[in-house]
Amino acid sequence: MVFEFNLKLFFIKITFIFFYVVQFEVIASTKLDCKEKAFYINDVISDAKHQDLTKAKLLAEEKGRLIAFNQLLNRLTLRKQIKKTYKIDLNKMINFIKINNEANSTNQFVGSFDFCFNRDEVLNFFKKENLNFAEVFSLPISIFPIYEGPSGYVFLDEKDLWYNLWKNFLNTNDSLLKFKLSSGNLSLRRSIKGKEIIKSNKNVLKKIIKNDLTTRILVVILEPKLGRYGKYQLKISGKLYNEVGEFDQTIFSKSRNYKNFKSVSVLNKDLLLKDINELIYVFEESWKKNNFFKEGLITFVDVYIPIQKMQDWSNSLLLLNNLPYMKKIDIIGLKGDVGKVSLAFQGTNNTFFNILNEKGYKLKQINDEFILIKK
Image 1 (cartoon, helix red, strand yellow):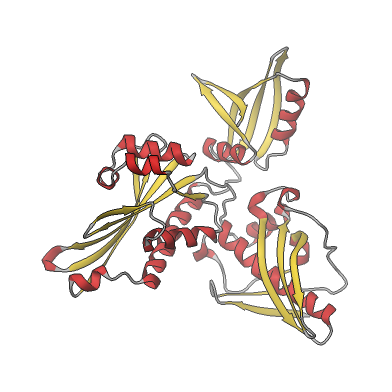
Image 2: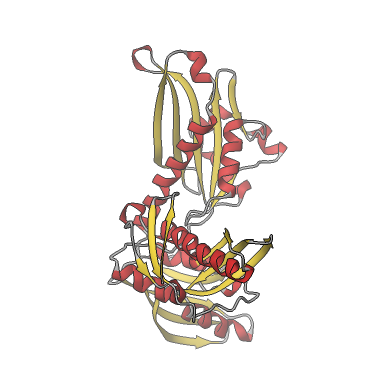
């Protein structure tokens, strides 16, 4: 039996073959049970109606699979590459389903589901459909909204519309980019000035990054201004800075024209939210392109593993062996307090470092040597 489901969010039609003889056993699994975080889709809300509540539940799960698969595609692949229709068997692609909560009436079932996708099956699908993809999460990035209005600079203000739009957006963000909204304490707020942030003061930006416990900062500026030829404009820009507060690149810049200053100073919530989505879309697509899975690219690196406890060595080898991009591990040497291994992995150094970060580890570089450290 073939089902077709239209997903308005990204205008994708997906058809798949569902066999009733194959049923999923719903177990009390969690995100920790899913081997790769990038392939775990959580909190999918789905509902279905049927006089038989058991069938209504199955239909809701079936609908939820399609929604989850759509989210997975948009998380890992370039959206412009996605076709309108795919013929797939989602049963083979999902390792387990977790029901978070459920409710029902006499003929309707509503549930919240988590889905753990099978990485190997999904990658086979990507390869078959010639879809470029990334699966590496970024290190945490601070988001610092600042409104450069007629009365001065507004930032870190819970009552500010620009700040709250970002707060609500990030609460539902589901991408490979990991953002953290800046929320400095009173001491930090008093010690920084909006003008210093706008002018890219390195020390101030570094202070915010340190307070947020992140590695980079994206300053998103909303500014009513008088543009060329006397036109009133509302300008939005996103500027990215590295961990020491140095300017990296402008991610996004856009201006919208208005008839007079009064109209430009009255902020439109819907238009601003559209701009936020566009800004993050541009940033996310750029991240994917820079972290594409490259089947033919193999990188080699030697790593030292400190040994303080007997299990440190075996735990580290187990960790490295279970990394999705790891191709080969050769043990070079081992003595009392340190071991050395030669690693061959798929992708670039940055890809490997980001994967390690997701596992709670990092590589510390001293001269030309790398040391594996638990964060």
